[in-house]
Image 1 (spheres, rainbow, N blue to C red):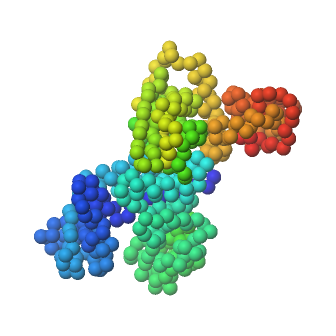
Image 2 (cartoon, rainbow, N blue to C red):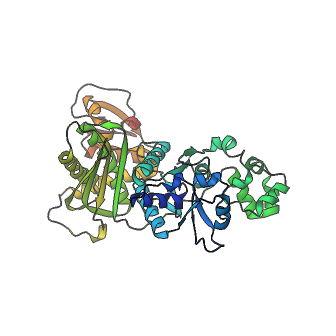
Image 3 (cartoon, helix red, strand yellow):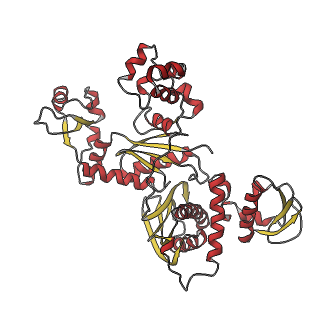
Length: 460
């Protein structure tokens, strides 16, 4: 399965975060829009520029030069001290927002993260998720980011470094010759400053030149590093997103809707999709939740949220969705235009910590088994291989009185059997008959009629 990777990089992080903090504290000035720098003590001639505004850049001020030099270039420059606590605060806010999309996040530095979105896209494209994150960071956190979209970490990182600020760039394998190869070799990720002159002496000046150089020539000159350079120049990178698999305190997911919605039924369908993603992640952590929280945002950017306790801790998609749906019904106001909806589960506990409750329904174990089957299919074939009834337009499916199909036994037959068993247990399949090497299935609540031409993949 092809990986789905994002690299999120905060634009001018230290200066942007300082600006946001100052505005929140009542400042009328946005230091991002005036000649300003973040630096050390100006009284010490050795103090350096850590970050600069676009206006300061126009005066030729450079990062890492002394504040003394910056003052010469721009006598009226405004200087602000660095504040790690502020930077940590906004870095954590960014990480929390990104955690709504995937559990696999690598904090590459205080102002940039890699996200592995494989199996977390929920029928959306990677670029759609990038666009949503891009907008939410700006609206909710007050600063901007560049996002690189690719199938590995290297290309995602390279893409996010294309034109700035406030941009989204893709860099897929087919785009390498036009987007990456024309760049100077000094732009290649992880290429040291001392290596660049050596490559230039070999007439290798562009990344494309390096990509087309014989591997043996590079390994003789640079050893293992030479092979890595060649692979990077050709977009080859198999490194994993290194995330900390620590137990979360809560798991949530939300989505900004492409257009405002007023109908309760449509909101319920989206809530089901979000619940399925949240509970899938919950089960991967081998945890159960006791509290469900639903969030709504109107087209006027008014946020409301409400939470309720479950009768007993659970990771069941069915149970958590039922609670979330009840909460949504209480929050719903007819004709109110909703632009964002979200769900979060909290008060988590590990499975082995759960005590048996007299209030647990008898079919709880059955639901766990069903969820496990679905999770295994998603892990093997991708998140969108099988989805809940509300996301399969099951109302239209039930209008067909009888749908007939076959699955031949083979490499995937067992998986289709599990999937069809899931549909059967959910009450979506009327009958299953085995016949030699095949088995037949029908979908619908009534007998009669016959609807041909539906393959199992389309039903699933």
